[in-house]
Length: 195
Image (cartoon, rainbow, N blue to C red; front, side, top):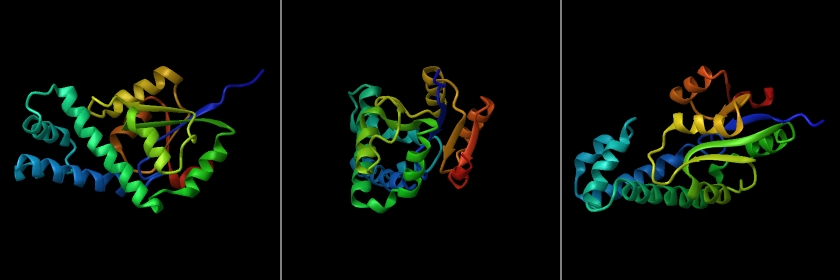
């Protein structure tokens, strides 16, 4: 009888793809929002935890008749397209050593990517990064929703069960706390060889 593989969930930001590939596109989208609204006061939202409140204010001005979902879809599409372009223009932002190690770990673990990137764009991001096919499953956010880590974690557990490990490349206190409270061992990329 085959024993089911343990689940190894990961993020992508600063694990497989350098953080700058997600930060620089944010800057470009904010510049676009500020330019289109002619509202420089929106810059106070850049880098804040609740930045999406500022995004919503900008999109209300840019698309006043659209629904909240349509506005969120549009701004997230702009962002995801900028991420893809950044990766294509900067192929060295991909950590090929971590990708190779994860490929080796697929023998023992079911690899699941948990990402706040959108379902619509994550395959394109992985393809641009040369990582298509690395993951067995992907948990991503809906394109028209604000990205919320707690929802993604709950989706992951509901669909596939509790992961044995969550491998991360960045310090994300909110995500790590939620996972630890669900008895998931959080490890960093520096600890990947312990798997």
